[in-house]
Amino acid sequence: AQTVTQSQPEMSVQEAETVTLSCTYDTSESDYYLFWYKQPPSRQMILVIRQEAYKQQNATENRFSVNFQKAAKSFSLKISDSQLGDAAMYFCASVSGQGAQKLVFGQGTRLTINP
Amino acid sequence: GAVVSQHPSRVICKSGTSVKIECRSLDFQATTMFWYRQFPKQSLMLMATSNEGSKATYEQGVEKDKFLINHASLTLSTLTVTSAHPEDSSFYICSARSVRLAGSDTQYFGPGTRLTVL
Image 1 (tube, rainbow over the protein chains, first blue to last red):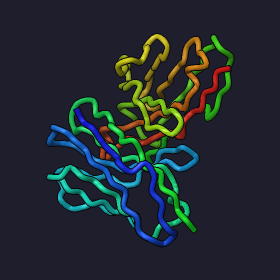
Image 2: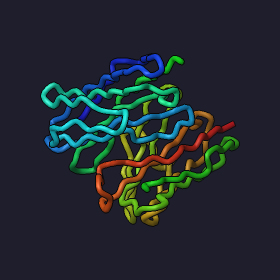
Image 3: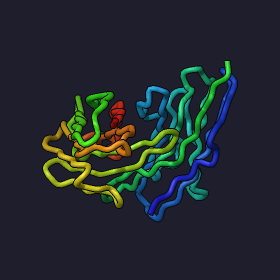
C-alpha cells in the first residue's frame, strides 16, 4: 500500500520569495508517479507538476520545481517568485503504474502569500 | 487539453430525494473515471473507480446502493446519490484519465459539485 505524508499543515511566504513544501511517501512499487496538485479557493484541483519515478531529473514547470529524492522517498515542491495567485491548498499525491492506478493523497498544505 | 466538466456545480435538495451528478471529459476519451468526496479542510477521499462499460469498483466503506455510478460512455460518468440525507452533504469531485493520453497515469479533475441536503 502507498502512503503520502505532508507534515506542514500551513505555510506562508512573502510575495516574490521562494517557498518549499515538503512531502514524503512510501511505496513498495518500482513503477510509480508523483504529483503536486493545487486547490485554490474555487476548489478546482489543478495539476502543478508530475514526476516519473524512473527519471532522475527533477521535473520543472516555470516557477515550480521539485526535489525528488528517491532513496529518501521525498518529493518536495519549490515555488519561486511566489505570487498572490499561488495561494491555495497544495496536495502531494502518488499513483502506482500498475493496476487500478488510484491516486493516494497527502493531507495537504495550505499556502498563504503575504503581500 | 484534458478538460473535465462537472454538472451541476451546486445542488440543494430535500432529504429523501435522489441527485445525479454528471462528469464529462470534454476533449479526450476517459478510459477510467474516479469519484471523490471532500470534507471541509480535508483531503480527497476516493469513493469509487469506474471503467467504461463495466461496473464501478467501490472503496471500502462506501455504500454502492447509496452512491450509484454509471460510466456509460468514454466521455460521461454519473454519480447518483440515492435517498439523500443531510450527512451526504459534501463536495463531490470527479476525475478522469486515459490510456490514450501521454502521461496516462495523470488524473484530470472536474470543478466539483457542492451538494447540500436539507
